[in-house]
Image 1 (cartoon, rainbow, N blue to C red):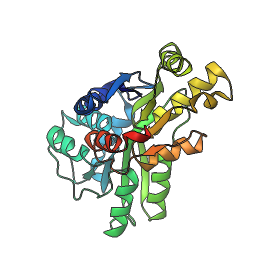
Image 2: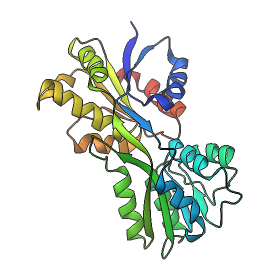
Image 3: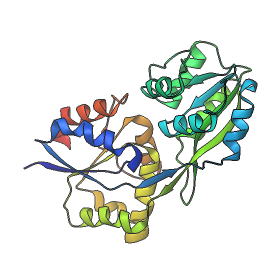
Image 4: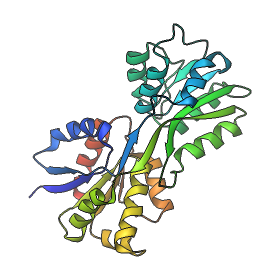
Length: 266
C-alpha cells in the first residue's frame, strides 16, 4: 500500500513540488492542501522606492521566486538596474538570470538566506555595505525566524540593512486547512512534508485553533518531514516534532529524492 503524504506548499510553487514527486508515484500518494497564500501589491510604495534608489545599494538580496517576480514587475519599465549586485538563493539564481537578465556575483553553496550570509562573510563582502533585503511581509500569523535571523547575521557582519516587503504571506482560510486536520484526525495520512517555516506556523496555528492547545498530540503517528534545517528549526521553536529533515535542499528534486531514500521512516 502506498504511503499517503500531505504537502502544504503555497499554490504558486506547489506544481513544481508535485512534479518532483511524480517519480515516486508507485510508492507515495501525494495530497496538496496549502497552508499559506502569497500575493504581491502591483502598486507597492516600498518596491517603487527600492527601484528608484537602486544605485544606493551595494547588494539587493531576493529571498524567493516571489521576490524575484515582484522585483522584475516593479523594475521592468526602467532602462537600468543600477550598480547594485543581485543575490538569490540556490536555483532561484537561474530564475533571476532568466527573468531579470542579471548575473549574481556568487551562488552560495548552502541554498538558504544563511548560506548567503556565510558566503558574504567568507568573501569579506559584507562590512560597511548597504543591502536591500527583499522578501515577504506577514499578515494574521507570526513571522518565522528565518528572515529575522538572517538580518541579525548580516548586521553582525557589519552590513547596513533595509528590508522591503515585496509580497504578503498569510494563512489560507481556516476552512481549507481544516480539510488537512480532518485527514489527520481520521488517520488518513502517513506523513506531512513542509517546505517553509511559513507553512509550519500556519499549519500549527490552525490545528490549535480547531483542536486546542494540545492539538500537536494528534500528530504522534505521523512522520513529519522538512525541507532543510531552517524549516525544521521553526518547527522545533513551536513544539512540532521533526522526524525527517532533508540534508539535501537545493531543489524539490533533492527533497523528494531524500524522502524516497528515507521512506522506511516516512
